[in-house]
Length: 113
Image 1: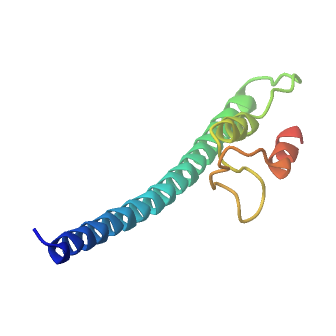
Image 2 (image 1 turned 180 degrees about the horizontal axis):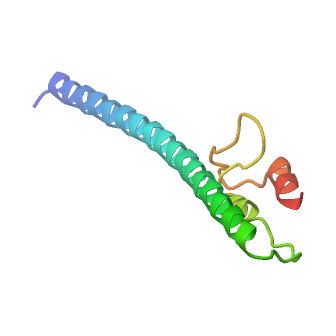
């Protein structure tokens, strides 16, 4: 095997490695999009369930006496869970995007409200 064949094989191998790396980057970006979409769908699903529950509760309250005890909002619990899983819950463009492990002051402000 002469030098030119060796360099040719190395060049081919380098192109293949670059192609695999590009494919991996595309897959990673697709995975991030899918996770963000999944989070958005979970939030929407939880909101719809909450609306259904509110409707059911309002019909129950019409037939029975309601108590004055204030219960914590379920939506805050959901937001806290999403934040704990590493997603932004703050208002704006970042909502639903992955935090990449960093704390976000805007998200923490939403939780403290």
